[in-house]
Image 1 (cartoon, rainbow, N blue to C red):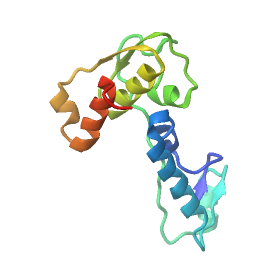
Image 2 (cartoon, rainbow, N blue to C red; image 1 turned 45 degrees about the horizontal axis):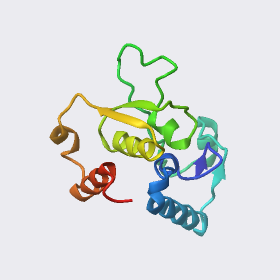
Image 3 (cartoon, rainbow, N blue to C red; image 1 turned 90 degrees about the horizontal axis):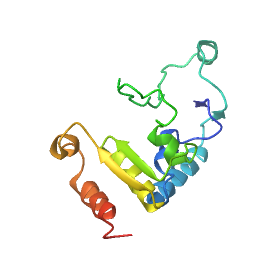
Amino acid sequence: MLEKEDHLGGLLKTAANPPFKNDLREYLAWAVRTTCSTPNLDIRLLTEATPEIIKKENPDVLIVAIGSEPVIPAVPGCEKEKVVLAADVSMGTAKVGNRVVVAGAGLTGLETALHLAREGKNVTVIDMLSWEEIHGPYPAMNLIHLKTMLRGDQA
């Protein structure tokens, strides 16, 4: 297993970072612990999977698990300093003011809004799609719980 970062978990580490995601942090810790203790598994951190390394390993099969890239819409102004990614907010590497607009009401947007609201920020969430169009494919229980937390009905 080749991992270019200094840790396992990829984007799950980012997703698990907000304080209200303790269950996901526990799952991530378990997954990393289980992976690291698996017999016959060679884990190489800080090692990018280059063509040369792959050729040298001569694997029977190559499984590519490269994560994902954020979707940044072609909206005028997205390149400005005041526009930050949800992942950077989650990891605490982006600075935000007291008034925040979250563009995107999918799970990532709503979780980011919840995280910021719990920090005392004044948050507005916007989206081009209707609630039904955005949340149709997600499990109903996840959305019900998240909406309840956003209303402040539950800690």
